[in-house]
Structures are given as structure tokens and as C-alpha cells.
Amino acid sequence: MEGMDVDLDPELMQKFSCLGTTDKDVLISEFQRLLGFQLNPAGCAFFLDMTNWNLQAAIGAYYDFESPNISVPSMSFVEDVTIGEGESIPPDTQFIKTWRIQNSGAEAWPPGVCLKYVGGDQFGHVNMVMVRSLEPQEIADVSVQMCSPSRAGMYQGQWRMCTATGLYYGGAPRALPLRPVLNGCQQEETYKRQKA
Image (cartoon, rainbow, N blue to C red; front, side, top):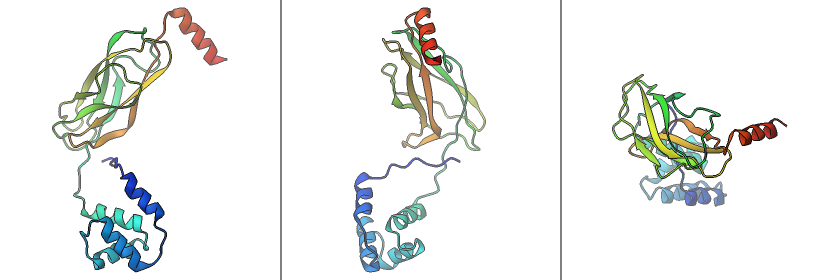
């Protein structure tokens, strides 16, 4: 199983950084307030004491304890089927990018998983493709219709697997490097400049 990506509320993080007290009663009341009074003072004191009265760590410990054990799917990148690392595509060209992926976990993927665009350069209008649920160790190809940029240059887009609930999995975003070129001469010139 791989770690979960968790987005922390920026407002909550700002409150943590502004709170500079070691008064235990203040920490207990702030802990209660941040949790929306879901926990009594004794429960707050327990989590705070367990984390050496570090409010941020105590909140994290509380949510770790309260959250259900979520089974995070596993995914491994096998290979680029089309448009591999360093391959060039002419500008303004429609193409299909295909990745070969594997369910590297011990459980089948839940229904509703998708491959989702998460950053970098976007090649067209498609930002998500549904992927069927794979059985453990099963391999499948996932394809996305794309269009290369109109100007020559180095471009990268990142795509990640995502559950229906928005949980990303499969490690770091997979970069899709594309180098559209106008003609072979420009490609050679670009290569010479990069080597110098």
C-alpha cells in the first residue's frame, strides 16, 4: 500500500503557525475548538500528552486514530506504449498517448478509478479517462487522445491514477515529455545547443 495524498486546509495550517503557547489549558481548548468540540477535554489532553503537547501532531494523531483503514490501490508504470521518453511529435499533431500500467497491489481496484491530468502542460481538452477495475497483478493499456502544442519546445504533462473519491495513488505523477519539432534540421540544432 502506498501513502495517501492529503491536502491540509491552509487556514488550519495558518492557525497552527500562529499558536505559540505551552499553556496546557489553552492547548486543550484550542484542540477542542479546532475539532468542532467533537472530543471532551480529557480526550484532548490524551492526544496532546501523547504528542508532547504539540497541537499539530495531536490533531494529526486524532485524525489518524479516527479515520477508517482505507485500502489505497497500488499501481506500477510498466512502459510507454506510444510516444516514449525523448520521442518527438510534430507541432499541432493529433496523437494517442498510451501507457501500460499494472495493478501491483493485492486487491482489485475499486470501481470508478481514472487516469487524471494533474499538472504541467496540457495536450488538448481531455483531463481524465476512466480506467476499468484491474485485478491484482493485471496489466492494461490506458490511452488519451492528445494534440501537440503549436510551437516547438520541450513540454511535459503529469497524469496520476485517482479513485472515485479523489484519492491519488501510484506514486509520483508520471511525466509525459514531448518535444514537438518543426523539422529534422531544427531538431538537430536543438540537440547541438543542448550538448554545448
